[in-house]
Image 1 (cartoon, helix red, strand yellow):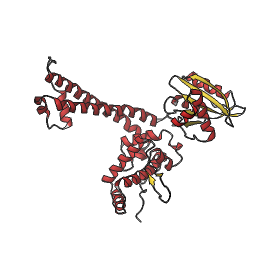
Image 2 (image 1 turned 120 degrees about the horizontal axis):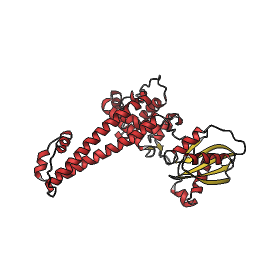
Image 3 (image 1 turned 90 degrees about the vertical axis):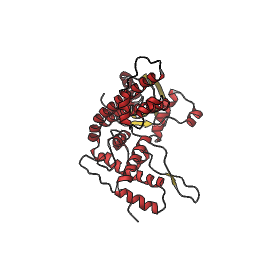
Length: 361
């Protein structure tokens, strides 16, 4: 679909997205409700939704709920058609208690949020290599969780297993334990608890081995994509393919949508929040934002605190100044967020230097 210019009064659209249908609404430039209508969540439905909105006037922007979920494909269609799409948060519980809940209400609320300027978020484009990294990491994360579950179940079964079996594998480290259990021969009579336990442990061990192989294959597929998407990010101290993949997924294929490194810090939940009252002036930890991105920054900081001399010197100096470890790590995560933002938004020819630790007084 190509971009089109339409005459008429300026209007703003809003869409409440669902799995099978999307409910759209349009308002005029002073917020009056013009019309609303439901459309199927299909390619034809998306195009009909856009044509219907444009039939009411010149479409300035469309607020879409759930641009990263049910509204992802609609966002792609609208963007390709030259429409400005704004990511709109779903109304909170207090608002819904006061104003009620229905698809038309939510659609009009999305449009109003855009018109009033309350909603300004630019959605992720989800059309490049970073989106490929994200979806592959979904499979990897699932495999890691399943492997951990299998290992926990193995250890749980061994706790109550017959002593003969426990002594056979006692003291083995994990890799040797899995190899040994995968070679167990339970026999044909599974009515005996010992035989049944051997059979269960063998299945779990072989599942663990299969998941190990799956994770290795996914790492082989993901690593070159991460390097292709942001080679500068991997050059930063303490940043590996796993943390880089998560930071890329959090930023999206269009990291320029974040206006500044402060905006990225807020996204990752490492921007301190004012918590002052009266004569007390302080900041507190931000517990919002993308917690997976926050965890990636936390991992990078832990690595630097252990192996980076520059960071260790900073920690020592700040400790002497009276800061506790939690506050020091909060500062370090903010510094790392600045470096990560520069790496994500730099051109391939730029080189990122790590110069963000506060200098000694």
